[in-house]
Length: 128
Image 1: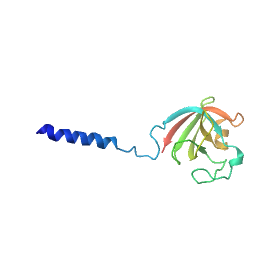
Image 2 (image 1 turned 180 degrees about the vertical axis):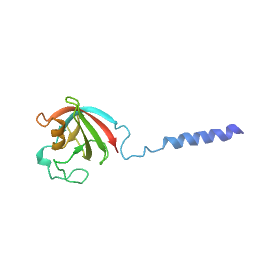
Image 3 (image 1 turned 45 degrees about the horizontal axis):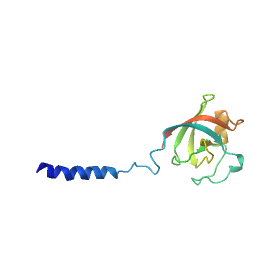
Image 4 (image 1 turned 90 degrees about the vertical axis):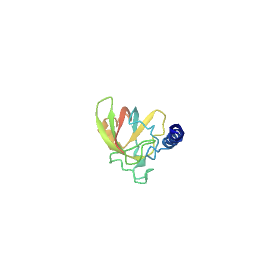
């Protein structure tokens, strides 16, 4: 008798957990920490709308990431000089192979790679 009740109950539990949501709009496979190359937006994008709908301002502390939700705050650390900044995700990108994040011009200056144009960085999610 007990087996007849437990088997369907266990099967229902397994099926229900298989349909559970991760709670976010984006895949959970987005890592909380990434390492790769960062670049910064050229001045020609200043004033244009970003994918989030707000205007890009090269004087703000913002960034573009391929998958993180808009509004996510990330700490970007330049692995070559140790400088770090906290940025808000407002756009999609970068669209060049090997790049993990595009940062605003102000952020690139603070991170110390404005002249070089790119830098090896670590990107850590601070809050979503």
